[in-house]
Amino acid sequence: MKARTLKKDKVNIITMGCSKNLVDSEVLLTQLRGNGINASHESNSDDNNIIIINTCGFIDNAKQESIDTILQYVDAKEQGLVDKVYVTGCLSQRYKDDLEKEIPQVDAFFGTRDLPAILKKFKADYKHELVGERLLTHSAHYAYMKISEGCDRPCSFCAIPLMRGGHISRPIEELVKEAQHKAANGTKELLLIAQDSTYYGLDIYKKRNLAELLRNLSDVEGIDWIRLHYAYPTGFPMDVIEVMKDRPNICKYLDIPLQHGSTDVLKAMRRGTTREKQEELIHSIREMIPEIAIRTTLIAGHPGEGEKEFQEMVDFVERMKFERLGVFTYSHEENTHAFSMEDKLSQEEKQDRANHLMEVQEQISYDLNQEKIGKTYKVLIDKKEGGHFVGRTEFDSVEVDNEVLIDASKFYCRVGDFVQAKIFDATEFDLYATIED
Image 1 (cartoon, rainbow, N blue to C red):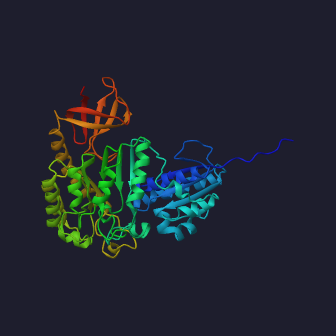
Image 2 (image 1 turned 45 degrees about the horizontal axis):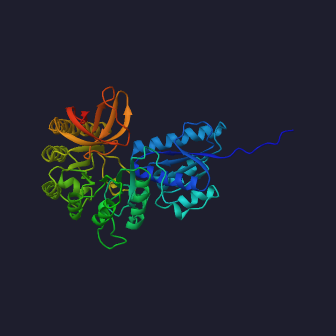
Image 3 (image 1 turned 90 degrees about the vertical axis):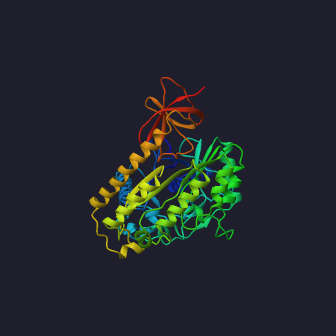
Protein backbone atom coordinates (compact mmCIF):
# COMPACT_ATOMS: atom_id res chain seq x y z
CA MET A 1 0.00 0.00 0.00
CA LYS A 2 1.32 3.43 -1.00
CA ALA A 3 2.13 5.87 1.84
CA ARG A 4 0.02 9.04 1.71
CA THR A 5 2.08 12.21 1.18
CA LEU A 6 1.01 15.43 2.85
CA LYS A 7 0.20 18.17 0.38
CA LYS A 8 2.28 21.29 1.01
CA ASP A 9 0.35 24.48 1.70
CA LYS A 10 0.09 27.04 -1.10
CA VAL A 11 -1.01 30.52 -0.06
CA ASN A 12 -2.75 33.05 -2.32
CA ILE A 13 -3.03 36.68 -1.19
CA ILE A 14 -5.92 38.70 -2.66
CA THR A 15 -5.72 42.52 -2.37
CA MET A 16 -8.69 44.87 -2.39
CA GLY A 17 -8.60 48.68 -2.35
CA CYS A 18 -5.73 51.13 -2.53
CA SER A 19 -1.98 51.13 -3.08
CA LYS A 20 -1.42 51.23 0.71
CA ASN A 21 -3.12 47.83 0.96
CA LEU A 22 -1.00 46.58 -1.93
CA VAL A 23 2.15 47.50 0.00
CA ASP A 24 0.85 45.58 3.05
CA SER A 25 0.21 42.53 0.85
CA GLU A 26 3.71 42.77 -0.61
CA VAL A 27 5.23 42.91 2.90
CA LEU A 28 3.16 39.86 3.93
CA LEU A 29 4.21 38.01 0.75
CA THR A 30 7.88 38.79 1.47
CA GLN A 31 7.63 37.57 5.07
CA LEU A 32 5.83 34.35 4.11
CA ARG A 33 8.35 33.50 1.39
CA GLY A 34 11.21 34.50 3.72
CA ASN A 35 9.89 31.79 6.06
CA GLY A 36 9.96 29.22 3.27
CA ILE A 37 6.18 29.26 2.68
CA ASN A 38 4.91 28.89 -0.88
CA ALA A 39 2.95 32.14 -1.32
CA SER A 40 1.78 34.14 -4.31
CA HIS A 41 -0.28 37.26 -5.02
CA GLU A 42 -3.57 36.95 -6.90
CA SER A 43 -2.50 33.70 -8.51
CA ASN A 44 -4.79 32.14 -11.12
CA SER A 45 -3.65 28.67 -10.11
CA ASP A 46 -6.43 26.45 -8.72
CA ASP A 47 -4.19 24.55 -6.28
CA ASN A 48 -3.89 27.29 -3.63
CA ASN A 49 -5.36 25.80 -0.46
CA ILE A 50 -5.01 28.84 1.85
CA ILE A 51 -6.48 32.23 0.92
CA ILE A 52 -5.64 35.54 2.63
CA ILE A 53 -7.96 38.40 1.66
CA ASN A 54 -6.62 41.90 2.36
CA THR A 55 -9.83 43.93 2.49
CA CYS A 56 -10.83 47.57 1.96
CA GLY A 57 -13.37 49.27 4.24
CA PHE A 58 -13.20 52.81 2.93
CA ILE A 59 -16.60 53.42 1.29
CA ASP A 60 -19.75 51.37 0.60
CA ASN A 61 -18.74 50.06 -2.84
CA ALA A 62 -15.32 48.97 -1.60
CA LYS A 63 -16.83 47.30 1.47
CA GLN A 64 -19.32 45.38 -0.67
CA GLU A 65 -16.58 44.23 -3.04
CA SER A 66 -14.53 42.97 -0.08
CA ILE A 67 -17.53 41.12 1.42
CA ASP A 68 -18.37 39.54 -1.97
CA THR A 69 -14.77 38.32 -2.25
CA ILE A 70 -14.84 36.82 1.26
CA LEU A 71 -18.13 35.02 0.46
CA GLN A 72 -16.70 33.72 -2.82
CA TYR A 73 -13.78 32.04 -1.03
CA VAL A 74 -15.91 30.86 1.90
CA ASP A 75 -18.10 29.14 -0.71
CA ALA A 76 -14.98 27.58 -2.26
CA LYS A 77 -13.98 26.36 1.21
CA GLU A 78 -17.39 24.73 1.75
CA GLN A 79 -17.00 22.99 -1.62
CA GLY A 80 -13.64 21.62 -0.46
CA LEU A 81 -11.66 23.67 -3.00
CA VAL A 82 -9.64 25.51 -0.32
CA ASP A 83 -8.75 24.56 3.26
CA LYS A 84 -8.53 27.91 5.03
CA VAL A 85 -9.69 31.49 4.49
CA TYR A 86 -8.07 34.33 6.47
CA VAL A 87 -9.25 37.94 6.30
CA THR A 88 -7.14 41.02 7.09
CA GLY A 89 -7.06 44.72 6.21
CA CYS A 90 -9.31 47.71 6.78
CA LEU A 91 -12.75 46.04 6.66
CA SER A 92 -11.57 43.38 9.09
CA GLN A 93 -10.09 46.00 11.43
CA ARG A 94 -13.28 48.04 11.46
CA TYR A 95 -15.96 45.34 11.57
CA LYS A 96 -14.17 42.32 13.07
CA ASP A 97 -16.87 41.48 15.63
CA ASP A 98 -19.72 41.77 13.11
CA LEU A 99 -17.86 39.78 10.47
CA GLU A 100 -17.05 36.97 12.92
CA LYS A 101 -20.80 36.63 13.67
CA GLU A 102 -21.97 36.99 10.05
CA ILE A 103 -19.31 34.85 8.31
CA PRO A 104 -18.18 32.25 10.88
CA GLN A 105 -16.71 30.05 8.12
CA VAL A 106 -13.68 32.40 7.95
CA ASP A 107 -10.84 30.80 9.92
CA ALA A 108 -9.52 34.06 11.43
CA PHE A 109 -9.91 37.82 11.09
CA PHE A 110 -6.93 40.18 11.54
CA GLY A 111 -6.57 43.97 11.78
CA THR A 112 -4.34 46.31 9.79
CA ARG A 113 -1.37 45.99 12.15
CA ASP A 114 -1.57 42.26 12.86
CA LEU A 115 1.17 40.95 10.56
CA PRO A 116 2.99 38.98 13.34
CA ALA A 117 -0.34 37.32 14.30
CA ILE A 118 -0.96 36.27 10.66
CA LEU A 119 2.56 34.81 10.46
CA LYS A 120 1.92 32.87 13.68
CA LYS A 121 -0.89 30.99 11.90
CA PHE A 122 1.82 29.61 9.59
CA LYS A 123 4.24 28.93 12.47
CA ALA A 124 6.37 31.67 10.91
CA ASP A 125 8.36 34.47 12.53
CA TYR A 126 8.49 38.16 11.62
CA LYS A 127 11.95 38.45 10.07
CA HIS A 128 13.47 41.84 10.92
CA GLU A 129 16.25 41.30 8.40
CA LEU A 130 13.58 41.56 5.65
CA VAL A 131 12.56 45.09 6.69
CA GLY A 132 13.16 47.31 3.66
CA GLU A 133 12.88 44.35 1.29
CA ARG A 134 9.61 43.76 -0.53
CA LEU A 135 8.56 41.45 -3.34
CA LEU A 136 6.66 43.56 -5.85
CA THR A 137 3.38 42.30 -7.29
CA HIS A 138 3.78 44.28 -10.54
CA SER A 139 6.59 45.36 -12.91
CA ALA A 140 9.71 46.16 -10.88
CA HIS A 141 10.40 49.54 -12.56
CA TYR A 142 8.08 51.36 -10.14
CA ALA A 143 7.29 50.74 -6.49
CA TYR A 144 4.98 52.23 -3.89
CA MET A 145 6.73 53.22 -0.69
CA LYS A 146 4.62 53.70 2.43
CA ILE A 147 6.36 56.39 4.49
CA SER A 148 3.93 56.31 7.41
CA GLU A 149 0.88 54.50 8.71
CA GLY A 150 -2.37 55.82 10.17
CA CYS A 151 -3.71 59.36 10.53
CA ASP A 152 -4.27 61.93 13.30
CA ARG A 153 -6.57 64.21 11.28
CA PRO A 154 -10.19 64.73 12.42
CA CYS A 155 -11.85 64.89 8.95
CA SER A 156 -15.60 64.42 9.41
CA PHE A 157 -16.16 62.03 6.50
CA CYS A 158 -13.17 59.74 6.93
CA ALA A 159 -13.06 56.36 8.65
CA ILE A 160 -9.34 55.76 8.05
CA PRO A 161 -8.26 56.52 11.67
CA LEU A 162 -10.81 53.90 12.80
CA MET A 163 -9.16 51.32 10.55
CA ARG A 164 -5.51 52.36 10.47
CA GLY A 165 -5.06 54.00 13.88
CA GLY A 166 -2.93 57.06 14.69
CA HIS A 167 -0.06 58.40 12.63
CA ILE A 168 3.27 56.52 12.84
CA SER A 169 6.19 57.64 10.64
CA ARG A 170 8.85 55.21 9.42
CA PRO A 171 12.44 56.34 10.16
CA ILE A 172 14.40 57.94 7.30
CA GLU A 173 17.19 55.33 7.54
CA GLU A 174 14.68 52.48 7.08
CA LEU A 175 13.12 54.16 4.04
CA VAL A 176 16.52 54.88 2.47
CA LYS A 177 17.50 51.23 2.96
CA GLU A 178 14.27 50.17 1.24
CA ALA A 179 14.92 52.59 -1.65
CA GLN A 180 18.47 51.24 -2.08
CA HIS A 181 17.15 47.68 -2.16
CA LYS A 182 14.51 48.66 -4.74
CA ALA A 183 17.07 50.45 -6.93
CA ALA A 184 19.36 47.41 -6.85
CA ASN A 185 16.42 45.33 -8.10
CA GLY A 186 15.58 47.59 -11.03
CA THR A 187 13.13 50.11 -9.55
CA LYS A 188 13.39 53.51 -11.24
CA GLU A 189 10.36 55.28 -9.76
CA LEU A 190 9.29 55.51 -6.11
CA LEU A 191 5.70 56.55 -5.39
CA LEU A 192 5.57 57.85 -1.82
CA ILE A 193 2.26 57.10 -0.13
CA ALA A 194 0.74 57.59 3.33
CA GLN A 195 -2.59 58.51 4.83
CA ASP A 196 -1.09 61.99 5.25
CA SER A 197 2.41 62.47 3.81
CA THR A 198 2.87 66.10 4.92
CA TYR A 199 2.51 65.03 8.58
CA TYR A 200 5.61 62.87 8.12
CA GLY A 201 8.15 63.07 10.93
CA LEU A 202 6.12 64.97 13.53
CA ASP A 203 5.94 61.93 15.81
CA ILE A 204 9.57 60.78 15.64
CA TYR A 205 11.46 63.98 14.74
CA LYS A 206 9.11 66.48 16.46
CA LYS A 207 8.84 68.46 13.20
CA ARG A 208 7.45 68.04 9.71
CA ASN A 209 10.37 66.27 8.06
CA LEU A 210 9.13 65.34 4.58
CA ALA A 211 11.63 67.66 2.88
CA GLU A 212 14.52 65.94 4.68
CA LEU A 213 13.17 62.52 3.69
CA LEU A 214 12.90 63.63 0.04
CA ARG A 215 16.51 64.89 0.08
CA ASN A 216 17.76 61.55 1.43
CA LEU A 217 15.73 59.48 -1.04
CA SER A 218 16.82 61.75 -3.89
CA ASP A 219 20.45 60.82 -3.12
CA VAL A 220 19.80 57.09 -3.70
CA GLU A 221 21.60 56.05 -6.87
CA GLY A 222 19.41 54.51 -9.57
CA ILE A 223 16.14 56.19 -8.57
CA ASP A 224 15.16 58.43 -11.50
CA TRP A 225 11.74 59.58 -10.29
CA ILE A 226 10.27 60.19 -6.83
CA ARG A 227 6.56 61.00 -6.79
CA LEU A 228 4.63 62.46 -3.85
CA HIS A 229 1.07 61.35 -3.05
CA TYR A 230 -1.57 62.23 -0.41
CA ALA A 231 -0.12 65.55 0.74
CA TYR A 232 -2.62 67.09 3.17
CA PRO A 233 -3.00 70.83 2.45
CA THR A 234 -3.47 72.28 5.97
CA GLY A 235 -0.08 73.28 7.38
CA PHE A 236 1.58 72.30 4.11
CA PRO A 237 5.41 72.45 4.52
CA MET A 238 6.63 74.68 1.66
CA ASP A 239 10.22 73.45 2.05
CA VAL A 240 8.94 70.33 0.24
CA ILE A 241 8.35 72.46 -2.88
CA GLU A 242 11.87 73.94 -2.55
CA VAL A 243 13.38 70.42 -2.56
CA MET A 244 11.12 69.42 -5.48
CA LYS A 245 12.35 72.46 -7.40
CA ASP A 246 16.04 71.77 -6.65
CA ARG A 247 16.19 68.01 -7.24
CA PRO A 248 15.69 66.83 -10.85
CA ASN A 249 14.71 63.28 -9.80
CA ILE A 250 11.76 64.50 -7.70
CA CYS A 251 8.81 64.68 -10.09
CA LYS A 252 7.21 68.07 -10.58
CA TYR A 253 3.96 66.47 -9.46
CA LEU A 254 1.89 66.83 -6.31
CA ASP A 255 -1.13 64.84 -5.22
CA ILE A 256 -2.91 67.12 -2.73
CA PRO A 257 -6.47 66.10 -1.75
CA LEU A 258 -8.42 69.37 -1.25
CA GLN A 259 -11.86 67.67 -0.96
CA HIS A 260 -14.02 70.77 -1.57
CA GLY A 261 -14.17 74.31 -2.89
CA SER A 262 -16.66 75.83 -0.44
CA THR A 263 -15.43 77.25 2.88
CA ASP A 264 -18.68 76.27 4.61
CA VAL A 265 -18.39 72.66 3.51
CA LEU A 266 -14.66 72.57 4.35
CA LYS A 267 -15.65 73.67 7.85
CA ALA A 268 -18.29 70.92 8.05
CA MET A 269 -15.60 68.50 6.85
CA ARG A 270 -13.28 69.70 9.69
CA ARG A 271 -10.45 70.29 7.23
CA GLY A 272 -8.94 73.22 9.15
CA THR A 273 -8.77 75.47 6.09
CA THR A 274 -10.80 77.69 3.77
CA ARG A 275 -11.26 77.93 0.01
CA GLU A 276 -9.19 81.14 0.01
CA LYS A 277 -6.30 79.46 1.86
CA GLN A 278 -6.39 76.52 -0.54
CA GLU A 279 -6.26 78.84 -3.54
CA GLU A 280 -3.36 80.79 -1.99
CA LEU A 281 -1.48 77.52 -1.43
CA ILE A 282 -1.98 76.36 -5.05
CA HIS A 283 -0.91 79.79 -6.38
CA SER A 284 2.23 79.73 -4.16
CA ILE A 285 3.19 76.24 -5.33
CA ARG A 286 2.68 77.16 -9.00
CA GLU A 287 4.66 80.36 -8.53
CA MET A 288 7.66 78.32 -7.32
CA ILE A 289 7.28 75.56 -9.95
CA PRO A 290 5.19 76.84 -12.89
CA GLU A 291 5.34 73.50 -14.74
CA ILE A 292 4.07 71.42 -11.78
CA ALA A 293 1.14 69.03 -12.31
CA ILE A 294 -1.29 69.18 -9.40
CA ARG A 295 -3.66 66.28 -8.79
CA THR A 296 -6.51 66.67 -6.35
CA THR A 297 -9.61 64.82 -5.22
CA LEU A 298 -13.01 66.29 -4.36
CA ILE A 299 -16.09 64.89 -2.63
CA ALA A 300 -19.55 65.58 -4.04
CA GLY A 301 -22.59 65.57 -1.76
CA HIS A 302 -21.11 65.96 1.73
CA PRO A 303 -23.73 66.99 4.37
CA GLY A 304 -24.13 70.77 4.19
CA GLU A 305 -23.50 70.90 0.43
CA GLY A 306 -26.49 72.67 -1.11
CA GLU A 307 -26.75 74.03 -4.65
CA LYS A 308 -24.85 77.18 -3.62
CA GLU A 309 -21.94 75.25 -2.08
CA PHE A 310 -21.79 72.85 -5.00
CA GLN A 311 -21.63 75.77 -7.45
CA GLU A 312 -18.76 77.21 -5.38
CA MET A 313 -16.90 73.93 -5.92
CA VAL A 314 -17.59 74.06 -9.69
CA ASP A 315 -16.28 77.65 -9.80
CA PHE A 316 -13.24 76.56 -7.77
CA VAL A 317 -12.39 73.83 -10.31
CA GLU A 318 -12.86 76.24 -13.24
CA ARG A 319 -10.56 78.82 -11.60
CA MET A 320 -7.84 76.44 -10.41
CA LYS A 321 -7.61 74.40 -13.64
CA PHE A 322 -6.11 71.37 -11.91
CA GLU A 323 -3.97 69.22 -14.17
CA ARG A 324 -5.52 66.09 -12.67
CA LEU A 325 -8.79 65.61 -10.78
CA GLY A 326 -10.70 62.71 -9.23
CA VAL A 327 -14.20 63.04 -7.76
CA PHE A 328 -15.81 60.75 -5.18
CA THR A 329 -19.43 60.76 -4.04
CA TYR A 330 -19.89 61.20 -0.29
CA SER A 331 -20.33 57.93 1.62
CA HIS A 332 -22.19 58.09 4.97
CA GLU A 333 -19.82 56.13 7.24
CA GLU A 334 -20.85 55.03 10.74
CA ASN A 335 -18.72 56.21 13.67
CA THR A 336 -17.41 59.20 11.69
CA HIS A 337 -18.21 62.76 12.77
CA ALA A 338 -20.30 63.37 9.63
CA PHE A 339 -22.53 60.37 10.42
CA SER A 340 -24.42 62.56 12.91
CA MET A 341 -25.22 65.04 10.11
CA GLU A 342 -28.21 64.56 7.84
CA ASP A 343 -27.28 62.86 4.56
CA LYS A 344 -29.93 64.60 2.45
CA LEU A 345 -28.88 63.84 -1.11
CA SER A 346 -29.72 60.61 -2.90
CA GLN A 347 -26.88 58.59 -4.41
CA GLU A 348 -28.19 59.58 -7.84
CA GLU A 349 -27.96 63.31 -6.99
CA LYS A 350 -24.43 62.88 -5.63
CA GLN A 351 -23.42 61.01 -8.78
CA ASP A 352 -24.95 63.73 -10.99
CA ARG A 353 -22.84 66.33 -9.18
CA ALA A 354 -19.71 64.21 -9.48
CA ASN A 355 -20.38 63.72 -13.21
CA HIS A 356 -20.86 67.46 -13.69
CA LEU A 357 -17.52 68.19 -12.03
CA MET A 358 -15.79 65.62 -14.24
CA GLU A 359 -17.35 67.16 -17.36
CA VAL A 360 -15.88 70.53 -16.35
CA GLN A 361 -12.52 68.81 -15.72
CA GLU A 362 -12.59 66.99 -19.07
CA GLN A 363 -12.57 70.30 -20.93
CA ILE A 364 -9.74 71.61 -18.71
CA SER A 365 -7.73 68.40 -19.29
CA TYR A 366 -8.36 68.55 -23.04
CA ASP A 367 -7.15 72.16 -23.26
CA LEU A 368 -4.04 71.44 -21.16
CA ASN A 369 -3.23 68.34 -23.23
CA GLN A 370 -3.58 70.23 -26.51
CA GLU A 371 -0.78 72.53 -25.28
CA LYS A 372 1.53 69.48 -25.09
CA ILE A 373 1.27 68.73 -28.83
CA GLY A 374 4.64 69.24 -30.53
CA LYS A 375 6.57 68.96 -27.24
CA THR A 376 8.97 66.17 -26.28
CA TYR A 377 8.86 64.48 -22.86
CA LYS A 378 10.82 61.86 -20.97
CA VAL A 379 8.40 58.91 -20.75
CA LEU A 380 8.61 55.77 -18.61
CA ILE A 381 7.16 52.73 -20.41
CA ASP A 382 4.80 50.76 -18.13
CA LYS A 383 3.36 48.06 -20.39
CA LYS A 384 2.38 46.92 -23.86
CA GLU A 385 -1.37 46.85 -24.36
CA GLY A 386 -3.13 46.09 -27.62
CA GLY A 387 -1.21 47.81 -30.40
CA HIS A 388 0.50 50.37 -28.16
CA PHE A 389 3.35 50.74 -25.73
CA VAL A 390 1.87 52.64 -22.79
CA GLY A 391 3.94 55.05 -20.71
CA ARG A 392 3.81 58.15 -18.50
CA THR A 393 5.51 61.51 -18.19
CA GLU A 394 6.80 62.78 -14.85
CA PHE A 395 3.48 64.67 -14.59
CA ASP A 396 1.45 61.46 -14.40
CA SER A 397 1.15 58.77 -11.74
CA VAL A 398 0.49 55.13 -12.46
CA GLU A 399 -3.11 53.99 -13.09
CA VAL A 400 -4.81 57.30 -12.19
CA ASP A 401 -3.43 59.86 -14.65
CA ASN A 402 -2.80 60.49 -18.36
CA GLU A 403 -1.07 57.83 -20.42
CA VAL A 404 1.26 58.24 -23.39
CA LEU A 405 0.43 55.85 -26.24
CA ILE A 406 3.15 54.86 -28.75
CA ASP A 407 2.25 52.83 -31.84
CA ALA A 408 3.89 49.40 -31.39
CA SER A 409 3.80 48.67 -35.13
CA LYS A 410 6.12 51.63 -35.76
CA PHE A 411 8.28 51.81 -32.64
CA TYR A 412 9.81 49.36 -30.20
CA CYS A 413 10.07 50.12 -26.47
CA ARG A 414 11.14 48.01 -23.51
CA VAL A 415 8.88 47.97 -20.44
CA GLY A 416 10.69 49.78 -17.62
CA ASP A 417 12.83 51.93 -19.95
CA PHE A 418 12.71 55.69 -20.43
CA VAL A 419 12.22 57.08 -23.95
CA GLN A 420 12.07 60.57 -25.41
CA ALA A 421 8.55 60.88 -26.84
CA LYS A 422 7.17 63.67 -29.01
CA ILE A 423 3.43 64.31 -28.64
CA PHE A 424 1.56 64.58 -31.94
CA ASP A 425 -2.06 64.25 -30.76
CA ALA A 426 -4.04 64.42 -27.51
CA THR A 427 -7.48 63.69 -26.06
CA GLU A 428 -8.82 64.53 -22.58
CA PHE A 429 -6.82 61.78 -20.87
CA ASP A 430 -4.43 60.31 -23.45
CA LEU A 431 -1.37 61.61 -25.29
CA TYR A 432 -0.20 60.06 -28.59
CA ALA A 433 3.52 60.14 -29.31
CA THR A 434 6.32 59.11 -31.61
CA ILE A 435 9.80 58.25 -30.33
CA GLU A 436 12.56 60.76 -30.90
CA ASP A 437 15.92 59.39 -32.06
